Image 1 (cartoon, rainbow, N blue to C red):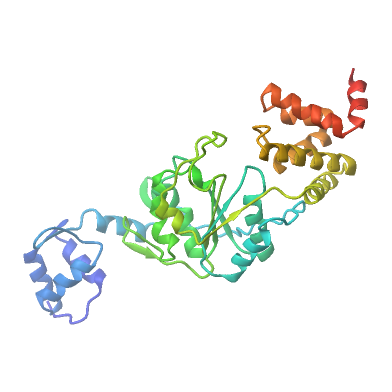
Image 2 (image 1 turned 90 degrees about the vertical axis):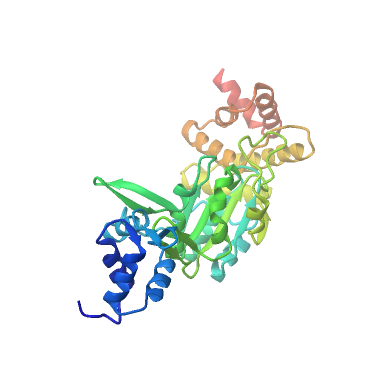
Amino acid sequence: MPFQSKFTNDDLINFLSKDGEVVTSDQVKGAAEHFGVKVQSVTKRINKLPQFQKVTRGTWNLSVAEKLERVYEGLPATPAVEENIVPSKDPNYVPFGNFSDVKRIINSGMFYPTFITGLSGNGKTLSVEQACAQLNRELIRVNITIETDEDDLIGGFRLVNGATVWHDGPVIQALNRGAILLLDEVDLASNKILCLQSILEGKGVFLKKVGRFVKPAKGFNIIATANTKGKGSDDGRFIGTNVLNEAFLERFALTFEQEYPTTKTEQKILEKVSGNLGVLDEKFCENLANWADIIRRTYNDGGIDEVISTRRLVHIIRAFVIWNDRLKAIKVCVNRFDDETKQSFIELYDKIDADIVTEESDDN
């Protein structure tokens, strides 16, 4: 055979794999002779290639790594998402709280991992979605649970048409696209979330199963939302939340504390929702906003254990559109609370809205 002074990694892999899955020192010598180079040159290159797994001195195994690499290159798994994944603009959205800061971070194009914490239903996730919608930025949202692991986030092998092929997970898709990665309810995660450590440092990730390194494209960033600050929930309100690894939390550059909107802002939100649904009742929206504000202040003072979220107020508005009955709309949406709390909420609203008595008596 003629000598080949120049040869590629694929040339070397194909030459060494033709005799089986185990590569010996004799085969390395044969490769050196075939390509016209020194044995040390072949050995050095083998040790740098992820396709070769060293077994003992002078022996390498191609059975796992090389096969996986061929699977990835020869038959790509489920193709990357090609459609537009920019969120739609919500006609009901009213900016408040940390929205302008979140939007500014995204618009900067910098890699700046951000953590947003706050009580349930106060617009944490929606603010990120709408910031991306206004900036025309792609967003990939991953809802985290205790079961979420590396396979769910980074990717893994899937069975496609009878063949086992590699599939990029949402994190890899976001890295490749330069999209915003939203880790929603991240405080529900287990320690398996630590597979994101290098990504949270802006360094990308090495896919060890296929020997491929993925660098973050320009514009990629990570934003996480949570009901807690990653320290667990002592009061039991958010059962299932976990104490997150300190090293994981430390990789987030900053933390925003999201509060519920002011009474006026919340009233505006409810008016937009009801108006777009074709049943605008400004007085009802005003009463609901004041009612929620009193409940939250009582909650903050330790007087009650439950709170009415902005999301629940929107539920009430939608129920009102269905039944056109203020009291019924409130009742069906606060039935989720225990009897004592539910009754106290209804009685409080009764004191705020004089018209509610008339509506109640009409039902009797």
